[in-house]
Length: 456
Image 1 (cartoon, rainbow, N blue to C red):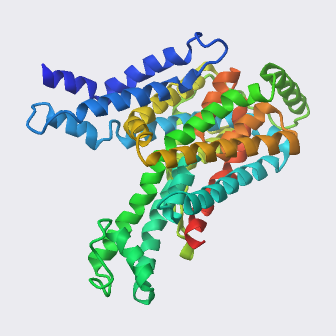
Image 2 (cartoon, rainbow, N blue to C red; image 1 turned 90 degrees about the vertical axis):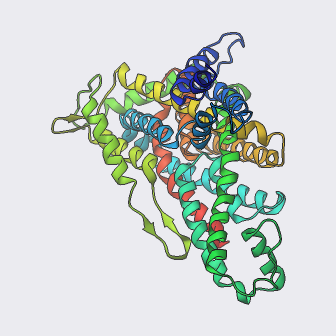
Image 3 (cartoon, one colour; image 1 turned 180 degrees about the vertical axis):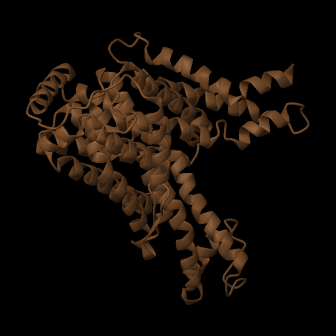
């Protein structure tokens, strides 16, 4: 019976659906008046559930019959990363197809403003994260700064670039070891052996084992900072999208009506061939995901800066926008405007957010009780500052409508869940066009900024 109990509460399918159910109940609750968390509800419920389940699992001793079941869950970090990536891919494909319907009209009216906004948000976040981490946080260095940066802006492609480049940079750094001062050597050896037992006198030159350990530990620093920063980066985007309209007294309904009237005027003057939309086309949706995975695979090597790769998420988003813009290709129809694609979007996002909460729940709560709280706080501050800077520039310098601006801020931070939240708040998918317009320069700029941190 004990084994059965633990097998149930550590089963990631059961946990995912349980969190999705409770999370949506919480998100739709009217007990907080007009304030609702909507589709982000599963994220917060997932954090509490993930912390509780993981904490309970830690109490199971190795000789307990349920230990093997518990160990499997801990090895997966509650929910397997591939399952999270799959749900995020489904969400991103839906967002891209929805956004592509109006993208050309948005770009026609606002031109390069969204591209500039995407680059500005990522560059500001990079500078803030680097200076804050290296200069202010204990043990801060360029590697932790890159993890903090990509986590605070919730960027998986940025993390991938940081991990790959950090290992290569560590090997290059090891090659300079013999020409370093004693102090620099001691600092490098401390990264190889955090216990401090390895000294310059013991290691006049580095062995292959030392270099391998340095590469592994350097990548671990990136991963540690990202793991702490990511959930708090999500929180900053979610809260920003919820409270900015309240703080700046923006009437979302009026903004939405104005945006639609402008969009209708642009559509009326459009001479392009009209492509009929369908409720949903599953084969086309699957093609978008498969093609996007291929688009995300190629690696572009940039010398000393490292490797640039879009990854599955970036690739699927690019392919969905491109196919959606084309509209139709033989038997494949990419213009989908029915409730089905919106259902796909909502289910995949809610499930993904719940899984993220389950995965990071234990580390989130623990970080608040230890030294990780500084990185958590830094992530919140960086995320909120990026949201605020994007809003002020977009609203008052570029004069953007809140409907598109909210999507562009999320796109500038590559924050897919944030877009889902703002769409849920507005009850409309129109912010997706702003997201799609800002995303290309944001994702490219984020990867470049991550790599530049190691060259600084």
